Length: 121
Image: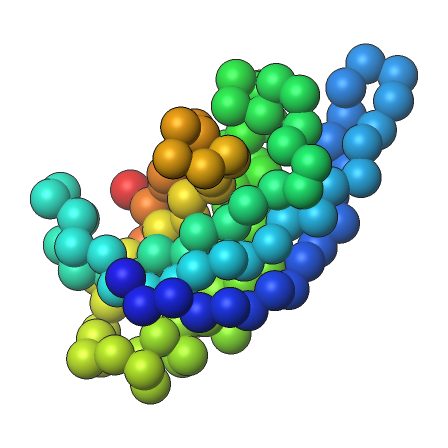
């Protein structure tokens, strides 16, 4: 994967009981992903700061992944196409990562529809 240091962030208020936590969702890497089921597509790696408590088991994880995908996709898709040999990606994927070599991650792939993220694959 080609490393791209594009540190953009969005603010997501993750509801947890009576309080909300401010989290920066940093795009830390983009590139081409060869997936065994979905073919050749684009991957975005996003790292939260701080990692919200219960992130990987939360009920709203699917909604969060789609929101992050649609936030970054309009700029990431053309950028990766210009920088690599992928002209028609078969999907776009979001990977939320936490920690270093021993961290956790979640990956979701989406169809690309009009430069945005469509249905989960």
